[in-house]
Structure formats: structure tokens, C-alpha cells
Length: 168
Image (cartoon, rainbow, N blue to C red; front, side):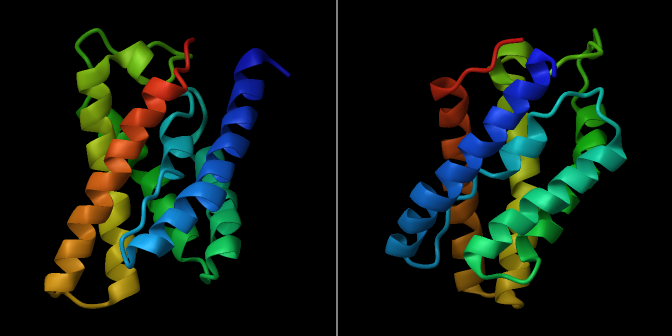
């Protein structure tokens, strides 16, 4: 196994641990507001991976999350959505010089401004799909939960990039 594969496996387990044992308990204490950092695993995968592989990884990773959150595929569906739109968002935000073949989409390699834009779009789509499917209605509580979950998740993902910097 190469260094990049080992780094992604380590990231998989680290994010899973953080999400399930730290952030899940915190979300229950606050009420209906949750913090989701698990989409960062899909967001940080190298650009060279084929879309089919990313979709399969997203589905399996989402099922891991669903097992602990007692959902029947809700997180898996939202994570597959994030994996599916990832190439579109990357094309939308592509820098003038383009991407390098083995480039990872981190704050270190792309810059803070690019990473915040990328994360905001990806987490926004994930949070919108997740909260909408959980609530199944559009109301003030839905909007409040959407905004707070999005804000906290984005904040924690940006903090994750500063606490665990991934250098190429």
C-alpha cells in the first residue's frame, strides 16, 4: 500500500471515531442540532479516484454512520449525494491553473479560501438533504435546524483542517 492509501484509511477511522463517539453525544445534548463532520472523508479523497469507487466508499461509510445513528440509510443516501456532486463542485471551483493529478482537496494544497468555499457548498448540500429528509417538512424549526447544523458542521470541518493538517 502506498502512503496516500494509508493516510486515507487512517482518516477514515479518525473521522468515524470523532463523529460517533464525540460529536454524536454532543448533538444529543444540544437537542435537534447535530454536527456532521463525516462528509469530509469523501471531500478529501484524491481527485484521481474514479467516481464509481467514491460512490461505493460513500455508501459503505454512510452505512457505518447509519448503524450507530439507528437510521435506515439516511446518512448513506446523503453521503452518496455528496460523492455524486463532488466532481461538479470541483469543476465549478477549479482554479485557473487546474488541478494536479494526485492532488488532495485540503486547505494545505488548495488554500483556505478555496477550501472554505468547497466545504460550504458540499456541507450545505449534505445538510439540506439530511435535515429535509429527517424533518419531511419546511417550517421555522426546519430552517433553524438547517442553519445551525450547517454552521456548526462547517466550523468543525474547518477546525479539523487546522488540527489535523494533511500535507501532500
